[in-house]
Length: 537
Image 1 (spheres, rainbow, N blue to C red):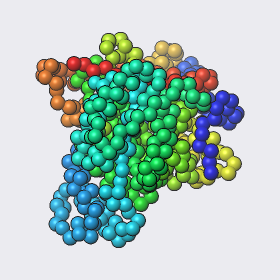
Image 2: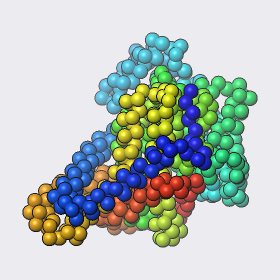
Image 3: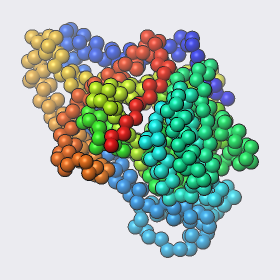
Image 4: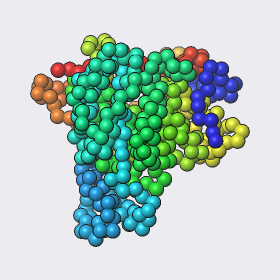
């Protein structure tokens, strides 16, 4: 079986090569533009045009997938998942009832009923399923955690079939303990059980992050399940951050998909994380970043073959026990869980999208400056997913490889491309066209103005359609405006999009370069910088 752990301390030469690779390529792109501008202006023009064309194609795809994803998301949210789940209790009887053929996904539902009815012994019954809801707490107070648990209780699902697991950090000190005690007091008797696990500080072979906390709680929970005589095969573990708000249909939808998926222990289930809980409260730059991330998650749900775990996700307890839960050696345990699972199951693993929202907070601190800083801290942590490139390459190019080479290599290529694109596209589009003129005006200005500038201008104009698509669709997804804000704040929501080029460079691109340069020089990020949660009242 594949060793799925990230190496500690000294890396092999091969591993270091792939750690260096993304940063080296991302830096080389910018350096190459300057070199071409000095010695080969025509090559520089073609180089710039290539990146503009890439932006054009991505913008067009982004616009299409945004509209497609939003429409599917809206239809999926309106489905009565509790009713569909109830149909699985007696699929033969359910097939005899009249169906509303116009209801979205009804044809697939009938196929699922036939599948379950023909091989009923292979599929669990809805009443057999137990949900373990892991909520991770660092220093968050009850104002943050309470609404998360309220949302779970408000689900169209019996809370007596749920076990609430509070995984909190010893590093969280008094705050964390007080929050846990308040939850125990307020929600006693509301769930099948409430379990609390305090993750000790400074355990060996652990980074400071959510992964070690989750794994510690998972191991303790596995002991509880064994003691209670519960089969791990019937337990679904859902991970929630302290500020997450599940849609009322999330748990019946998840249970339904779990039952109708034959290979359920070799998949995970990924809802759409939407950063909108407090979107009316946060400053404009944070709204742009949050909305962009929300739409990226919607788009990703429409491309299951590229979908990866992000933030909140669900996975079978039996599978988690087998792979010893999550990684304790990376600060990006969510995205890394995809690769960890992929290699544990020798490539026979996939992520099933749940096209339904889990609301999360956009970045907000108690001052404007702290909020701006906290946003960068968050996105640079996400950008550190570039560390997975070396991990994936190690498991593809090793002796005794257990995954299909071509399919695995394609995944590696896409992973590398996504991180390099994240770093270079924004600065190349914003400044690339000016560099040849500034560096070598005599040789490049006529060539650029007469041949390249009109083409770039046309492509950029067309690509703006993607931005407007995102802007208009974002209005349809806004939560209700709090009464403390006047209608004029809606106008600011439209004007904020002029900041997109700025946020793309200052947050998306710079965080990618930051993370990749850290990997390049071997200065690893081994501390999960928690995003501060602030509630505006």
